[in-house]
Every structure is written in C-alpha cells, then in structure tokens.
Length: 189
Image (cartoon, rainbow, N blue to C red):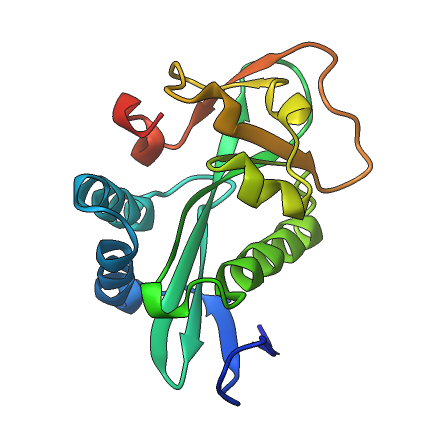
C-alpha cells in the first residue's frame, strides 16, 4: 500500500499496509491505549483471535505506521449469509488509533484504504457496529445495516450500519449471517 498524506502537525508520512503476525504486540498496545479499561481486554483478545482465524474469504487487517511506529489498526472479517444471496460482505471491527494520533485522519485513512481493498476484491457490503455519527461520513447507513441481521442481539441497535461497495443489489429482505469465530462472542455485540 502507499503512503498517505494526512493533515498532521508534522511532515511525516503515514503508511498503511497489511498487518503481519509480528505486529500483534504493537496492535494490542494501540488497543490498550485507545479503549477504556473495561473494553481494552475484550478488544485485545478479539484482535489476537482474529489473527488466528483461517477462513475463506480471509480476515484482512491493516495497520498505520508513522516513522516506523505502529499507530493504528483496523480489521475486516468476512460474514457468511444464511440466505441464498450471492452478496459478499465484511465487518469492520475493531478500529483503534493511538490517542496522541486521534482526530488527525489516521482512522479515516485506515477505513478508506480498507474500503478500497475490499472493493478491489469484489466485496459488496461492509458493515460496522459503532458510533453512527463517525461512520456515516464514510457512507455507512442504518437502512443498509438493517438488511443484515447480526448473530447476537445488539446492545445499541442504532450503531449497526452498513454500506454498499459495488453496484450489486442488497438482499430484498433482512438476511441473517454468521461471523468468524472470533466475533462469536455475545459480549462484542
């Protein structure tokens, strides 16, 4: 992947690349700093479990680096529709940026790079469970999210949104799906 110019206070370039196994300790450090104490253990375990997943299509993770230091992370996991629909989809989870680099475009660069990667791979739908005010700027919409029924009840249903990445149509009726085993934890939903 290529370096990304961001409106940061320094002239350094952020680079976005595919995550590798050797990045896990740095990713978990970013997660521990980015999430509150009650969440960071759960999300840290999730990130470790996502690295172990072997699925087809595969789980894909990206990291952001600045001056050789890992400062951000995002993971995209495939969903498996229980219907006969041929729509392929992924879930964005988790997204973490070191606190000192938040609100500087790092998270946006990770999301946009991931959307580009998934679009090139022919993925049709991207879902996310998070702050709708943040994710709507990327094109995530509640009406798309409602077409995909998560495997567990949502604690905050308003946070479940989705977007189309290609011109394929979405299912006509809400479709249930299964997630990768790392996301098969009701505490995450």
